[in-house]
Each structure stands twice: as structure tokens, then as C-alpha cells.
Length: 120
Image 1: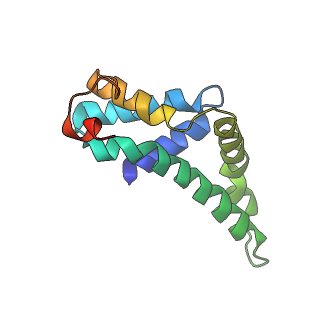
Image 2 (image 1 turned 120 degrees about the vertical axis):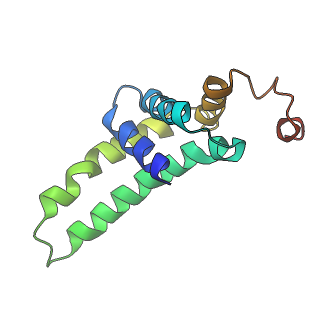
Image 3 (image 1 turned 180 degrees about the vertical axis):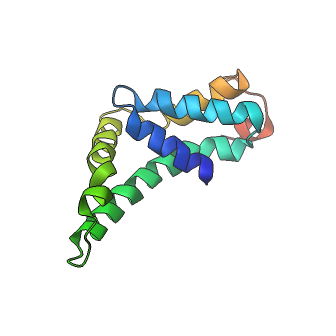
């Protein structure tokens, strides 16, 4: 969960290529602590969901009349929406998960011989 959050905010911070930021953070983590195959498969989706959560929570919190911290709350809303729009223009959202698998394992999912990949 913490890795997904870190990946999400790295993605928000890289307007040119959020996927590159995602891969960099995940690779840095992986060099210190290995991830299970299932974790690799869902990490991108968890990061994207965190961005969704962030923009929705910002919108909700800033809509409360009693909230005096609207500028602070909204600080990541615009970059979050921009990141989500950037991601929405991509042909496949499976790409980041597949690319992360390749970077971390040195194998393509198509050529992987593990039991899990052979049944996919």
C-alpha cells in the first residue's frame, strides 16, 4: 500500500511521463525489497486508484463550508486530474504492469515460463 501511494505521487509529479516515474519508484523499492508476482501485477492499478482517491477526496474536502484549508487541500487536485487524463489517452492500461514486470524480472510476460504466466 505504501509503495502504491509513493508511486501515485511520483506519477502526479511527472507531467511528461507518469509511467516512467511509476517504474523508477517501483524499481528502487524492488532493489531493496522484492515484490511477489501478484504485487507487480496490481501495483499500477493501486497507484492509479490512489490518484483517483486523492482527487475525489480533495474535491469533497474543499466543498465543505467549514473547511478553511481549501488551497492546501486542492494542491494535488489539478496535477492529479492531469495525470489521470494523461493515463486515459494511453491505448492500454496493462502496459505499465507489463513493463514493470519486464524491468523487474528481465523477462517478458509472453516469454515467462512460470506457472502463473503459462495459464494467463
